[in-house]
Image 1 (cartoon, rainbow, N blue to C red):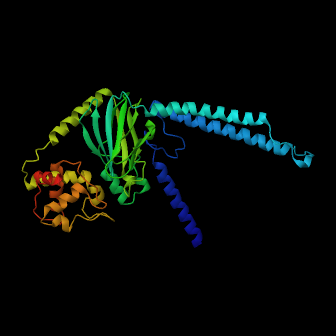
Image 2 (cartoon, one colour):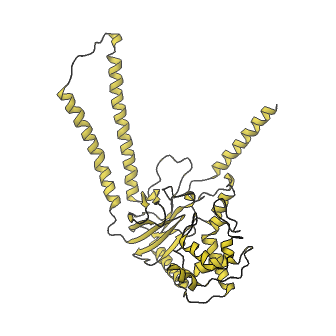
Image 3 (cartoon, rainbow, N blue to C red):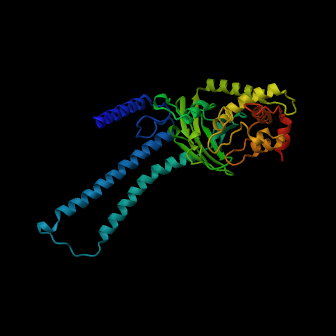
Amino acid sequence: MKSISKIAAALMAAGAFAGAAQAVQDLPGGPGVRQLNLHAPVTRIAAEQAWLHWFMLITCVVIFIAVFSVMFYSIWKHRKSVGHKPANFHESVTVEVIWTIIPFIIVILMALPATKVLVAAKDTSNADITIKATGYQWKWGYDYLAGEGQGVSFLATLDSTHREMSNDGAKAADIPNDYLLKVDNPLVVPVNKKIRIITTANDVIHAWGVPAFGVKQDAIPGFVRDTWFRSEKTGDFYGQCYELCGKEHAYMPIHVKVVSAAEYTAWVGGEQKKMAAKQDDPAKVWTLTDIVARGEKVYAANCAACHQPNGKGAGPIKPLDGSPIVQDADKTKQIHIVLQGKGAMPAWKQLSDTDLAAVISYTKNNWSNKTGQLVQPSEVLAERGK
């Protein structure tokens, strides 16, 4: 009876898990439940890649069936048990020509459309907007280099609530459809415009890609690569870093929001206002209260994912709460680590002097770190050039 009860309990648990798993729905522009085919294309290149995929697959299946049908027919029809005797000949010019010409024609028929798609996918000329995507451990930095929006720059990091959900051991019933794909600042582009993406990296090899666009390009430190897309539909489209880049590789999503031309213009105006507001004078002298308040926001957006909101760290991530370096009277030690990185800690040079001074001041005066120390932007600027 006990064994039967255990089996029943196991079946009930499996049923509950299956029901929870089924609660997750397809993510438009992202992965689907039990997805077998390629992503639904929203660019011409992606559509041609999908056609090419099925063309190659069908061609190979037809060749497989034809070759093996002839082989099995020959084996069965000319078997020794029905009186057939093996022919005794060495070579045939006709056969040699036939089995050379036919494969050659097949290869050419397969290569022509493949070459067409490949050449089109690499043609990044005459782009309407050029964006540089820089891979960091573990986030993406976007810089709008040319076209409408030139000068806009920001970081895209995994949404902190999703990271906390993962740290707590995400329960199937609580997983949202965009689990580990939601970012704080998605890449925004206009519909029906050619978008050139220049990829590079700050630390290790990453890869930027969005399946619905039919693009995937490695981001290599010290090198520049490029790709492009032109989305024919508005909406949200998702990808991930497609190169194993370290322990946080699973937390480096890509979210591209395609909007109308009018919405894009409005977004650019808003971002330019935000950037203008952030153009702080590094010579400005801050009070401890003001800079710590700003540092709290910087920490939540950039540091809490690894060091946790409580500053305790996790695994190889060292805690900031009670850290000797954070509490050290020599402020330059922590400034150097934040600027240059150390071990699993990446460099944060991409943040402004004010943001770095703010987050360092915040960590020095939060949790049990009641040092009373204040780091001014000018001190970060002085150390940045060393």
